[in-house]
Image 1 (tube, rainbow, N blue to C red):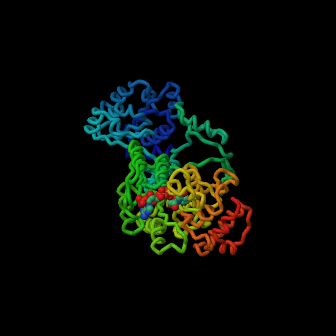
Image 2: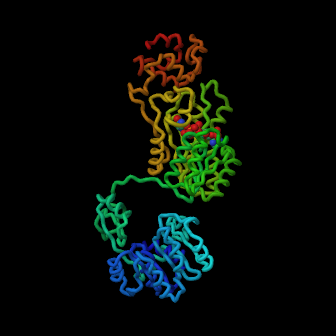
Image 3: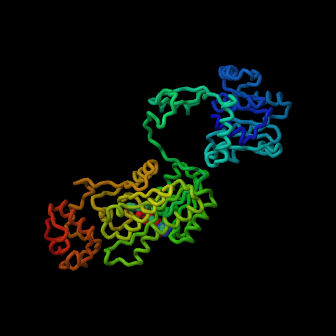
Length: 544
Ligand SMILES: NC(=O)c1ccc[n+]([C@@H]2O[C@H](COP(=O)([O-])OP(=O)(O)OC[C@H]3O[C@@H](n4cnc5c(N)ncnc54)[C@H](OP(=O)(O)O)[C@@H]3O)[C@@H](O)[C@H]2O)c1
């Protein structure tokens, strides 16, 4: 409370000794701190309160205040009091926990060059101020301050300044314990409800975890269970590479729902679907939200630099999320160097560039998150280049952590609802990650939140396929269909059924996947070596 009061009065309002200060709603606990500061500086304080009872409370707490300096906030008679007591000059500083509607009235109480300090959860916009008030502000050269504590935490200088003021205040007896109401750790909900209720806030709300202890504890001897929630900074910029893809759009929605207000969606092609346009239209209706699209290709250094510079025009970059991907699956024998390069570009090339450039230009990014795949952790037939790209970004994340920077790579299994698997015409693709069933996108996002909160570097989120569940419908397919799906062969009729699987590009991962599939569905236990020499003619003889 003193922290907020010092920030408002000293850093923003530049309060001087012997000035006049009007505190609207003096019965709030922050106002109690502000009154203490003002009185110690010899300022004349005028206060409004909601009831006679609260007026008595203030007079008991601050015996130096004259009863006539405290007015009721229920009527506007306080305006007359202030005019009279300041000889029509008005006060030097006006501070209050206000509703927007009051701003127009209270500006009238200010002197020339006065400071109006607005503390509220409601953002004030130009539309909330009427023409007379504008004229009054201009004529009197009034300075407006919106108090947002989040701003304090962005500047070391301001934080240090307040720290010194608090220390000085404690030694001079200005900063003293404020009235408090103590709740037990079983009453967190009640404490929260009371804090948000309209009842008087003359008491700080405290949760008691343990008794006071004279000794300084190295670690808390008791903690309470709480479910943390991730919030994003409204002034920070969040870049989502691959942001117009299935995962990227849902991630953007999540960031917005948790307070982010400046988002850059990066994709090479830009808008290319009706759904993407719908999302942008939907977001355009949210006040103060800026969502920009950048088409720079972050997989090359120049494009990544342009992306960062473009994002910086909106504010300081607080988060970089890489959800970009290009799938070029196929049997290893059919892969080319160019295929590998194209699959690696949105993964390691983009992450590497963003890592390098962010270290130079915005080293304090709070979140550097790369979306990987279980293909990296456990492999998946036909996805050698994809697996390599994902594995490489995970190693980059480990390196960033060693350098003391944030990094998180999440290996997801197949995702339901959106993204490359959901969009795939090949419905079997999702089931090609053996033993897994697609995970709902909302639980993928909850996993992402939990992993960030747990401060992990590499994490995995996937749903294990239930034996005999509808998802494990592979039992309904013939052995040939299942094996060809594992090999990545789309057209079974085009295959020569007499060729062995190893002649068709079988690799060790595919072989172990086929082994598991045959065991699970046909109870046939066959060695890896035997699988290599199997032909489709032989596989066709397995029971359906
Ligand atoms: N969907 C799944 O089942 C699944 C499973 C496991 C892991 N993942 C991972 O989840 C992430 C999101 O995948 P998704 O399903 O949302 O894929 P998606 O819908 O295909 O979206 C990927 C996006 O990446 C963009 N992109 C490709 N190269 C880029 C580049 N160089 N720069 C910027 N953007 C680029 C593409 O847009 P442009 O073509 O316009 O550039 C595309 O919209 C990926 O990292 C993927 O590996 C997905």
